[in-house]
Image (cartoon, rainbow, N blue to C red; front, side, top):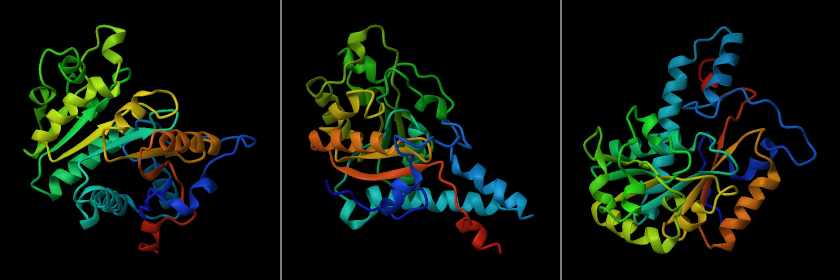
Length: 268
């Protein structure tokens, strides 16, 4: 499988495995929580504090730069203009997938007048609505029950070209099924209304939903937790994507620490 290189601060394709424990090694304790907006910021702040530097403004600036770069490489560069729908998924855990999906959608909406929708397809453990400070209400699961087209359940956010399709409430196990035949009509409906669809999906190794959805989109971004996600787990996820012919657009390395962080170089 060919993996596109996204040369951004949260992703280094050629150096990925050095940050991941093998099956024989003990994973280091992460310095961040899974629901932290940018887990690696905490390690940068700690180092800045030890050096007697105030890196807060620099870190915020770095965060904006990196998220803008990710959005550009996924949707806005010339070679990515035809890309309409992308999945964000963890390997075996959520790994901040929903937060990254929301922030990327916000960035795309801020950089282009196109209509952008973030969809929560993690029906078993939804969290996109919480990142946006709202109740879930009706959403994807409602559409899957056949009561209304998915696009009509999307809610407008700010800026006005940004929308959310929450997971909705699931009343039965059948509501959690995301097989391609069931989801495809709703994906076509959403594609007719929105230019870009960013999907927060369950982890690749622990659920078949990401693989089912992956057959209906342009590719998947895999979120890996540095020093926590094992190499073998990442390889298994990559193999599963390859088996289903789902393009791997890149890997976001979350929780990575830097001996001398890039923002601090500019402060020294």
